[in-house]
Each structure stands twice: as C-alpha cells, then as structure tokens.
Image: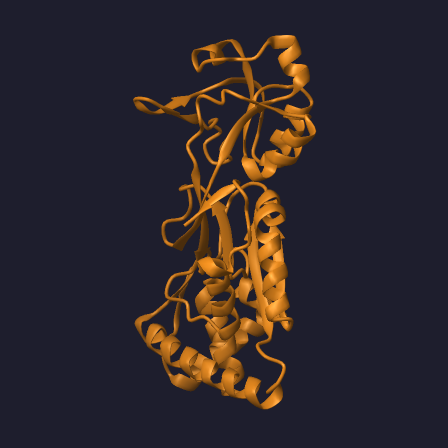
Length: 306
C-alpha cells in the first residue's frame, strides 16, 4: 500500500498536476487525490500546497520526495533484476518533438537505441506549435530548436541546426530571385509567427558586421515548419527552413536555395527535461544515448554535433 502511494505521490510531485499523474499512471484523477489524502493522513503532514492552477511541494513534501524516489528506484532495480535478469532494461520513455525533428533527426536515434534496448518503449508526441509544458503532459524529454524555451527546464545542446533560405522555381520565375539582403524588400515571405505574441519572427543572416535581422512582408504566416514548406512549394513566398527539412526538396528541384552568399545563423537543438528529477535507468539510458557523441548517427551537413 505504501509503495503504491509513494508512486502516485512521486508522479504528482514531478508533474505538479493531479491530472497529469493520473494520465501517466493510467488511473482516475479522484484516485490520485484520494491516494495523496491517504498518504498525508498516514504521515500526519501536508505534502502539497494546492491551488486551482498549481500543485507545489511543501518543505515536508520536498524531504519526503527525495527519500521516496530513492526507495522506489531501489525497489524498481531489484524487481527488474528478479523478473527480467536476462532481458535488460524495460519501461517507457515519452518524448515531445516537432514533426520535422521527430522524422529527420530523432528517427535514427530511436531506431538504433531500440536495437540496443528492445524492451524500452518510446512514445513520441509531435507538436507543431513549439509550445512546451511538462506540467500539461506526462512527458520525460522534449527536443526543441532555438533559445525560446521555459527557463525552468534543464537544457542540453545536442547540435547546431543549419538553415537555408529557399523559394520554389515557380516563385522565382514570376518574381525573380533576390541576390542581396536589400533585395528582400521587394519580395514576400512565408513567415513564422509566435502564438503568444502574434508577431512574426525575423530572419537572422550572417553579415560582415554580425547578425543582420530581416523582417519580411508576407501574405501567409504559419506556426510550424511543415506548413511553411507546403506554402513555399506552392509559390506563396520565400521562406527559411532547417536543412534537414529542406534537403529532399532541394535535391529534387522542387525548391531552390537562394542568397547562398548570406548564410543564416544556426540555432541550437536542445534536449529539455525537468531539473533535479530523479531518472530511472531507462531515462538515463535514453538521455545518455542522445547526448553521447559516439552514439550519434550520421546527420550529414544538416547539423553540427556539439
């Protein structure tokens, strides 16, 4: 009974949400609430401060959390050794990434990882809007391109992603090809915009004087790279993509790289996770697999591995 309550307590503490804990443990939210009440009554202490929007540990809850995690990890390791002494690590890892990152960067990692650890299940949740909330979903890791991420998360840079500026042959035939950054004033873009602010994101070109940020006019603005590719292929404007996303269209001639003399500043691909969260063996294995250089697959010129 106490171990069951510990597991529920740990999930609530790490996700700061009764609903997300219920989702992770595949039980009802009332069952989670009842378990926490039972545990607090058993210990005669208050473990959480609850509001309508947040669930935070009390000082007593912090102390109990660290001891509970240690006990659960030891019990889990013992059970694995007893039940599956020859099969190796098992369990589930849940990852969030954009569709393009999941398809182009993460795929070879997952394939190779599961060859080494076939009993570890990987759940990949794809999000196009680049909004990350570990509290809103029971996820373990997120892959994120750029520096705009919640600063309360732990970040490990995996690679520097290369970008290219592209247009369709049809667009170039109708509107011409820009040769300099000043020429961009005469052209339209398929822009990206922020869901939070509604503002479009500038393009950062490497210039002799440093990074030159250019804001483009547009008829179409989107929140995800796959939509930007689709509208650029349709001739709606010039756009900027990660090379790992644009490469197949450049090779086939459906897109043309422009402004080659003005490279675009690379952006970091980050692995994000909750800081100070005790990792199980399977989470440590997955984290190490993505962050260790000798495990990385060949990503050609798409990204510079850190």
